[in-house]
Length: 445
Ligand SMILES: Nc1nc2c(ncn2[C@@H]2O[C@H](COP(=O)(O)OP(=O)(O)OP(=O)(O)O)[C@@H](O)[C@H]2O)c(=O)[nH]1
Ligand SMILES: [Mg+2]
Image (cartoon, rainbow, N blue to C red):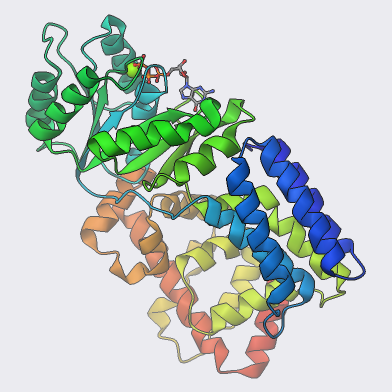
């Protein structure tokens, strides 16, 4: 993953907490120093690091852990929360019809990011087009055209037209009825000079983009802050894309500095290929950086907590009726093979209407089916995963297109989900069934 060094040192620090005999002020001071060092090495701004470490120290020494949480867990949680804070608020681009315009200086990765965005929206079932709004660099047209061919989306450009506003306007007019997401590449410049600002303002005025995304190369480190601020002040951006996080130790500096500007980081680029692209979510990012899975396991070991606690937690949540597609996704990872699913299905209370029972032939080719289900779920938005009953005809169509399956496959997934949900709910009233389900979930691991 990106920021491997930072990740390693933070994990090492958290391990110190886990392995310590006592969590006292001496230990807290020590880990705060460790984290400071790690963040500074990742190019995070000194002032930000100092503020951050003061907050951690204060909270860790003063706040009492909430009931049921140990001191260790509490301190780890504080570190996690404060680190996520540095990275700003999460924002997800909406999955809807829209015009997206890229802006940024020379060579930052605008054109490459156009292809990545197209891939992202295509995966979500929307139809993108790429428009070559960079009329200054002769090779820009060909570069974007090739990217469009590579990611298999339509392309619009006009080699003879030297007015960027005209090209973009014509492109939008030509495609606005047949595509969903219009992605416009624009020209880079050496620095944010008046000429560039004027051209951007003109394009924005003529085309009214929904999103104005600033693309910044993470290798410039903390300079990402002033650069983003200058663009934000001049033309008001709606989000930041940080590219090339794969190849730089300065990613921490770029991430933290960009987050301070007031426009959220929406995506990060982690390579040259169209798929090397991630939706940016601060808390998820920090979880991975800290290896929260590992840490949790360690904590449990250190405190000799109950075996199978994870499975029990999942089972409890599922049975409380809050069974979402996210749960089902996680569960599919957990339950290996239909053996256990079949057993769970067999525990269906008799009261369940027969038509909702999972038929034997549906149980066949399980691996294949589960794999397909996951691909389908990857085309859903977070909102849809959390709240599957909003998925009606038009969303089904979009999701199917994104996943490259037929509408009926999406309906089948929803049907399966509903059976699972009802099963879980049915079980929750019955103690024997509950125990049995917990056992199933544990065995399935
Ligand atoms: N490793 C890596 N390389 C990237 C990433 N994004 C872009 N690049 C590379 O950076 C170089 C410049 O990318 P472009 O997309 O052409 O940048 P641009 O902003 O359009 O450049 P101009 O149009 O000249 O202003 C290319 O060689 C890309 O392959 C990334 O996330 N990781
Ligand atoms: Mg370009």
